Image (cartoon, rainbow, N blue to C red; front, side):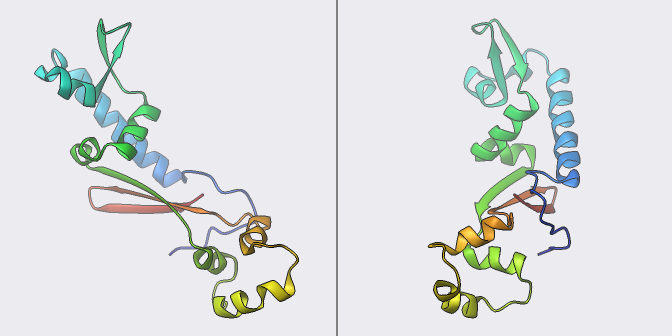
Length: 149
């Protein structure tokens, strides 16, 4: 885990490297769409996985970049065909602790937390320091980029 970026500033959903990669992947998707003739001769069912209908089905269009990213997050078949995998997961309390206190001893924190803090939940302390709660992993062509939110 690379934690060199840690600061008390709010974390962003995507770092610059992730955003550049997603921009490149999306451009490739749009190029594929522009080259396609008659929706690449896809069946209606296949087209609905790759394209969106506009004006009640009169015209096919590529997904917007936001729609494309959400589609990759939620549709494994689509994601695999694009070669892109986007995973988001919640960080455990221990992972969050280790971001705030690298090399610290989580077991001591757990044992002493109720005695040293007024708050009921140890996550509250980590929230006060803007410690991220989520790990976002983007994998494309065997390249993996991780970032925290």
